[in-house]
Length: 447
Ligand code: PA5
Image (cartoon, rainbow, N blue to C red; front, side, top):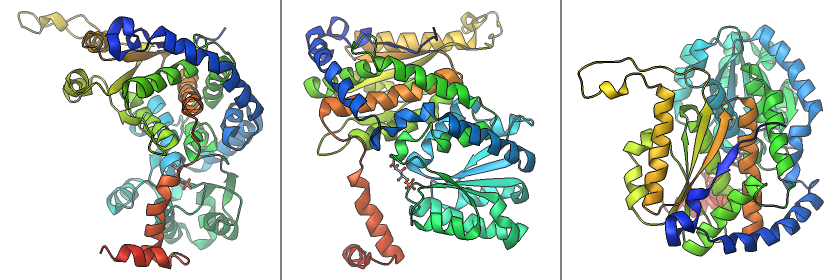
């Protein structure tokens, strides 16, 4: 049987953190609901919202991506992903976790160099990017479900002009792949008119699209084993069939987050991986939790944190501040190679000699987790046997399903995001989009 990521929640319990932790009876009450919830989710499995659960089983999409990747490898050195929010954070988290900060410098023919350039309209990053990439060797992956989002579209138009200047109008289409919904949206229309390759964007919400082409194409282009990512996701999907919280760790995680919020007003949820390369993953989690659960005056505020650096920045607050937080650590059990700290005699830091850097990381996590528990601060740890495609796929699906279960416990729709619409409309108004004149008038009163 495949090894699974584990959720260690003993420091979440009242036995360890007193009145700030969950009581077994409360968990037992939620346990009673799980069967019905699973039944409901199963019935709705073909619905638009839950279609992300089918992504790990989409073998047709995989075949298509492998074929496409062969072509990309033969023609390009770089891929620039242009998207924002749910259309970008998943791809960034996968790339961050598996490749890390130096991947582009280290990459030697194993795959394309991957860059991200759609999540801001600050001109500096895109200008800097243009200094380091050869446009003739670059494929742009433009990702926008709606095909309407200002930030990626503004960057796309700018980059398109640059590509045309470099390779000519007649050849520029070879440098663009678009992921969007096949409807009348402007990005789709431009793509069709210009002859760009269009891939169907995952139809559900962007924040559940990490394991769709949005995350998978850049991962494959970078040289990662996307089959194993999906295999990991399927392994979690399988345990979600269980109606026992003990066996269904995403539901268990959701139950504990729910109880913390509902019974103890702990409305802040911190994700703090003790793995440098899971930093981007925390930002993906942050969006998933915030946009899915934050609505109708309800909401768990997610915080993306990182160990051990935040031990020197945030821990004072987590340890000694208000009792309004739960912390989830992520720890990686086995690192393929460790670095031994050299011995230095006759110094106060001699004790460091001989330890591996990774064993120090584990000690840092343990010391932080136990200290928090002793200060009555509930905390849990997700343990990855290794940081590879298989366990990363599990981690993504773990949180996606956990948020779905949270929605069921709270009885809210975790798939919409009405709160982001108003500012979008004001922006359209100010930028002169037709149909948004009323919004333009409204917001001009404040200029
Ligand atoms: O998760 C979401 O739905 C959002 O974060 C969107 O992904 C984000 O606003 C970008 O939208 P689009 O993909 O339509 O450009």
